[in-house]
Structures are given as structure tokens and as C-alpha cells.
Length: 378
Image (cartoon, rainbow, N blue to C red):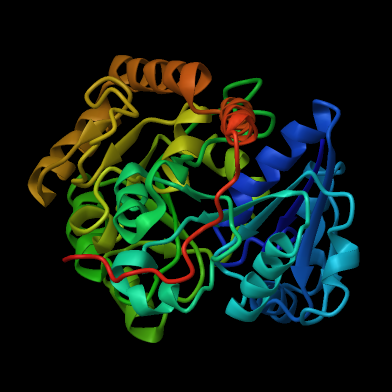
């Protein structure tokens, strides 16, 4: 099978979490013998920011850990028909420009023989529905949504049984426990500041509890404004800047535990959708404690795979327990790893994608997507 995936960037994970999952899925498909091609726009802002801050060396970790992967760039919509010639499946990520999304849909309507999927991995369908409604998805065969609550939004918009929930997952070729355990200490949190979507939550569930549990806290990520850095300093946390995602396993391996603090939209409007960091952390065998969110799809075994904290005081107690109890740390690491290996690797997601494609190909006739989408009900 020849798959073409149109992404914002494959090479850069600077404030671009979809790159994590995409790399693992495309690599898995290559290892299974599929012909895979990634396309990304010239001047992708994630890549431009990475190069501005770190130069070409900022790509070293990606190149070293994903030698199978490469991508081609395109400018505008010119030449897209030729770029997609011979494709069996085309997946277009929602970070692409609306004009490009519409142009590929027109190719499909005009007789292109590939199966065309739109991949949504963000909360904009509920936080900024007008932004998603600018996409002309007439011509698309189906939607891939990264959580069931997001799938329900598209079903309300008229997509019916042509919406498929396709969760993110860990690339277990890279994200796995260290071959040899070294001394671990303190907490680590890898995440971007992100437009004030969880500022209070970070202070309540990460910065203050870490200090109360007397655990050193290392912070990695980008887009931390001056007031955020001042908050970190006030709580005694150490800010270490951007971390290439390919290096996250080695950082997890040096720390006792990590914390999950979901963005507010995923708690209030899209419950059941964790960030990819949860999958990656558990795959690396590091104990994890999470701020509140609803595991509505039963992806994990809360209390066994990781601990939930309903408030800051409970988070501090959990962190203190992890600090003092090696058996608890071992149990959480073991159970979390079991769940990833059983259900949540990129290999599992490729299996699911193959099943989705088989269902679409099995349909007697392919009806194309609705030209207009209605706004979701609150």
C-alpha cells in the first residue's frame, strides 16, 4: 500500500505533538513493507521556530532515532495532484491550510482513486468550531478523530458511521524502559505552557505539590512567557527549555516520577482524551500521577497504571508516597507498561488503521463527505 500523509511537520516536534505519533505510525508502516511518503509545507512555523532557537543541530535527535523517515516539502497547492499520484491512501492533518484541504478534496471528487481521510488531533472542534468549519471536507471518505468525544462532534456534524476514533499511542520502538536502571531522582514534566489553558492547574497540581513533597522538579517545554518563568522560579522548579521528543525516554529514565496535567478543554469539553505524554511516559516505565480527567473510554486502569489526584493536597500526598515507597513505584511502572504493550503502541494503531481502511473499501459505494458542517451544540 502507498500512503501519503500531509502533516505540518514530520521533522519538527517544537510545539507540535502530532509529530510524536506520526513518526511512530509511519515508521511502523515502513517496517511492515508499505510505501510511505510524508509531505509538509515550506516554512512550517514549528520547524522555523526550532531552527531559529537551535539551528540545524536541533534536528539531530530526530535524524538519529528515525533514520527510516523523511519528508518532502510543498509550496501552496501547486503540484499536489502529481504528488498524490499512485497513492492508495491520503491522510490530511487538521493543521494544514483550509485551501489545501479543500484542493485535495476536489481531487477526490474528480475521480482520484485514493481513500481520503481527515485526521483531527486537537480541541478546536469544540473550543473554536468556526476554525474547523472553514475546512471544506466535501470529497473526504472519513474522519479520524483522536478521541470518542471528538468523534461524537463529527457525528453531530453529519458524518455518521464514517467517523473513526483513532487514539494516539506510544512509539514503543523508541519509548521503552532503559536497558539498565540508573539512579533516579526528582520529578520531571515535559510540556508546553500553551496559551493559558492550564496555568492555574499547573500551579495547583505540579509546582506547589512538588515543593510540598520536597521533590526537585525539572521542566521542559517551549512558549514559557516571563510570568511563567517567574512562577517556576518562585516554586523552586528548574526550567530546562525545549527537549526533542526523541530524547524524552532518556530524561524519563533519570527521574522518579512524572505528572500529567491536561489542558482545560480536554477536561471540560473533550473528556476521555489524554495527551500523548501519558502513553509515552507509561511506555518508558516511569510512575505517573495525573490531575483530574475522566478516562471515559477506559484506556487505562487508574490506580494501577497511574495514580489520580483530585486536588493539590492529594497530589502532594501521592508524590510523597512515590518518593518514599520503591514498591509503589515498581508496581505503577509495571502495570502502566503492561497496558501500553497490550493496547497502546503505534503497532496497535496501525492495525486499527488497516481495519478502518478495510471497512471503507468494503462499502458497496463510497459516499463522500458533507460539504458543510453544522456547529456543535454546547
